[in-house]
Length: 431
Image (spheres, rainbow, N blue to C red):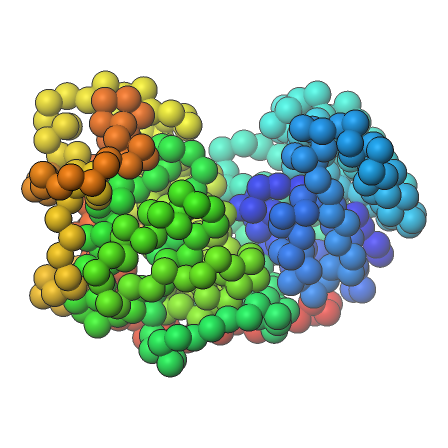
């Protein structure tokens, strides 16, 4: 059986689709997949053993320059490639107009979500087979349900379970770690010293944990003897990483790496701390224990899903707001609790004397606020990302202070299975 998947973006959404492939590979002997995906994320499907061919697209770029896309022949090349085979099923796993438009160019019965289940109801008009998948559950489970209905098999009995601290009998993501690590060009400058990775970059302004908090967490980690690695993907993230790492000998700002290189760094980590970002979902797919921080978004629907994943969600009156810009009007008390911009905060060397903590075992909890750190009078210019104390600052994150995050991270670092970075083995052959 040969199936075409259309799931183009974003990074987290692409990763959320992987367990559905693993389900299908277990249920249907010999099933093989091709996958249409944005060019920036084309590496991800190649890491799953059930995927034969990846068909990259550049919808984001094509939208900006449609005439250039036509003249360059990229669009015609996509249509020719996607039309090479007759598929037993074509599944639009995204439920958007753009994904449905791409999927309709393939040859084979087209499956997708019905108008009540799709993010963009208009997309359902393109599908020959429309499937009902209720809202109100995690995105991973919704994709798994769609595949099961489209391909005619029953989901595993434990599909609806959130793995959390319960070790799975097999790896639901099914990634081939040898493919993940191949060609990553990883440089281990610490000589094999155990390390943690801080995944500080994200897209929405409201998803950013304050830089001053990242700095304090880095101090706690290196004072406890841990190395910290900071990846980055653009100039703003690089500048943030440099500020977090300044004068901390145990903290390393990594060179700019491709997605495979960042994946290798994550795969080798003892644990991660992440905001709501696609790389946090990648850590979950690689079975790396991770503390993920949520302010405007709901981890119950789109949180990092998998073994060893711990969620800290802000207990704030307007959270989760699902807004890209914060519209909350802070009180005087809120302003007192807000962290100082890192560019003004005093940068101390590593040595706060913090040991490893065994407290904080809850998977999702609302930490108590902490007093505002002292505000220095430094003469360095305030960074725009931290300057929005009156408009746009995500005040919900004052409920997730560094001490509480460290407690959760310390639990992961002290657990025996944190030392094992290998994910449970899985075969894509039928059981």
